[in-house]
Length: 624
Image 1 (cartoon, helix red, strand yellow):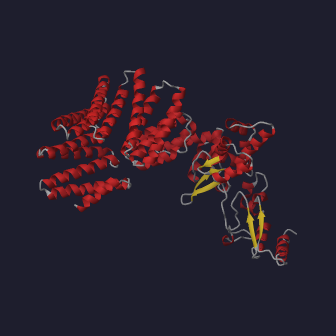
Image 2 (tube, helix red, strand yellow):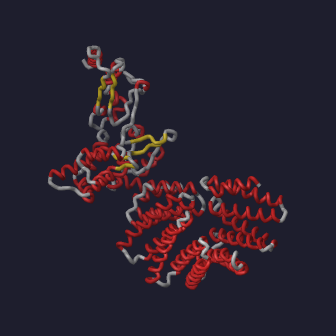
Image 3 (cartoon, helix red, strand yellow):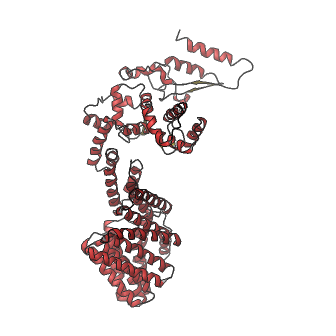
């Protein structure tokens, strides 16, 4: 009888569709296709034959396909295997339109909540956060289970607030229910394998075998790999490399519940990736010890940025998006670091956003710990960086307020701990930035006052730590700015301050020979000194200064060959040197410098194309 039913049903449908009035179209909806497979553990042992229990259904579909007015929609949690070779009643891939209907987008999820009579904004936000599996991706089943919790509470006469929701969901076993539904057709060995692989952001056969070898208590038979990759909660993410990924929500739930097998897998994978010098180890460390992972991440990011390893920086930022960070202080440091990176790459909107996120995080810390000097210091540095960003965008009023806020932070620290040299150094840096601002606004007297105050602050810091290379370098930076101010006002004084700036940079390099900022700063001083000497017709001295500037940038670029700021500074120095040689009649020598400057500009634009000033300089040089 079962062999005849598909044929008879198709024939009845076809006959019915010929009767008047004829429907333009008939849609048949079949839900839960996976119900053909029993809720048992024999799925793996039965092999591929297990998936042929829907043969009569395939027979029906093939007959229904011949009816032109008929459209058949089949819903299920797993991709149908109807087109695989060797099965009876094979359905050709050309007859199938496979659509992956996975997560809600946020708008749809909110509409679902509105229809469920949940309109309170904070409760909606909590429900969405609970069921979120990615940007604009909300898991429908988990959202529905969470809505059930809210409705159950309302029946008891209780209105859940956002803080009680997660606890109530857990207490009512909704998380366990979700996992149970996802594992509906999974036997225990396979479930344990999934728990281990859930620790991976992605996995392939080699990684599966590594876990199989190092987690002895988990049964991971060799043949189970192909089998488990066919479940609905496993996705193919890279066909070329055969990489798969457990559903993000399932991975999150296992981590949140600190599943024993998943935690052991994180331990194994941390060692595995760390031995390969692969930053993926940070993700697994984060799931084991989030604070230690943040410390490692910040150290590695700083080294990568100093070494102009921009691709590594971007990969670290992508990895950081999946970090668990439970402390506001750490959130502030991470946002501050990303802001500085974005500012260096001229991504100003993103940099401003991250600086403000960092300041807000530090504010939350200070509400609880108002006298935390380390947080005040970090907040002051971030405000200073924000001020520099705003000043670079000609937002002078905003920049001035940010600088004032930074000084207030450092002043508060010095009231508590007046001997902290680093705070004097930071205070001096901010005052130097204020001097630069007044110089741009042609307020020379105020600029001079600020520069002198900055020099005094650095001197105060050097009394406490005379061998601190960073303070010496910052002192050189202030003296260079003072020299720039005086270059048009009191040229002899400018020469004196440029020489003092060079001496400060040399002292910094004596303490730390590979300090790239000091090499770069030294190059800036020599370049500006050369410009002044050229204007004063001290040609021999200018020649030496330009060559010293280019040599200093070479030293900086030896340590950081792709660092945008250093490349741009050297391009400017080569251009100034070329113009000087051209003025002296050395056109061939000038062209040599221009050619090298073009190469530097090209290299800089390859690292960061969005640099209009460098693009204009390159075009000007090419016209020469």
